Length: 155
Image (tube, rainbow, N blue to C red; front, side, top):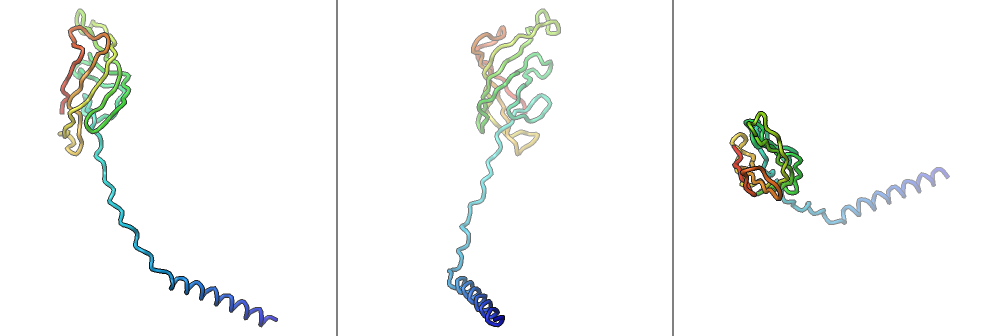
């Protein structure tokens, strides 16, 4: 009986091996994987350079008057930040400098902000930075300001 059991096990193993080898030999060679296009790296969107020369993306605040801080943007909510421009809503906090800036009061004006004209940043030539900022005042605005004010942003 032991001999029959061993023979049956040996035959089953041989049949299993034959089936496996026969299937592999009969199967067509696997096609090489389809060539995948190289991943195209999208350039990073431009940055906004602050008064200290730091790159910022979608900052919540931004100083416009680097020398004295008498004009700054706060509560910025960016609804776009792209390769050509960026847009946000926020508040422009401006010192009225009356009777002089050290004794002046800060006033808050709702504003729509647009950044544009990206160019190569001299500090980091592989990075683009926005070179112009435009402020749109939909309601009140600081004295002597137009409804739309545009400033260059340094390099």
